[in-house]
Image (tube, rainbow, N blue to C red; front, side, top):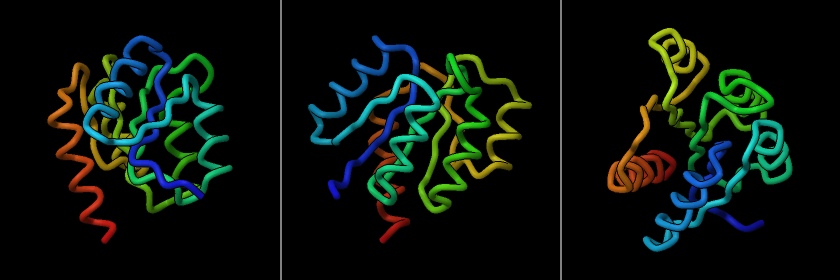
Length: 125
C-alpha cells in the first residue's frame, strides 16, 4: 500500500487541483477527492495510507461534519484538518468535538499547511 502525505476532500475543483500541484512542488504527495462519499470510500479502501486529511465542510453530497464522523470511525488516529470558507463557530465546536485536529479558514498558506503536516508526522512517530 502506497503511503501519501495528504488526502484533500474539497469540491472546489480549481482550489483542490491548485493546492495539490503546489504541495507536489514541495514533494508532498496529495490525493484529491471532490465529494464526501468518494473521500470516505478512498479512506475505507486505503486504511492507514494517509498522514493527514484536509476536509472541506461544504460538500455537494454530505456535510463535512458527517464526513469527519465517518473518517473517525474508519481511522480514528488520522489527523483531520477542517479547511473551510464557510465555517461558523458552531461548526468549529462540533468538528473539534468529533475529533478534528484543526479548524482553518480559507485561504490558507502553503507554509501553514506544510508546518501542520510536519507536526502531524512528528506526533505519529
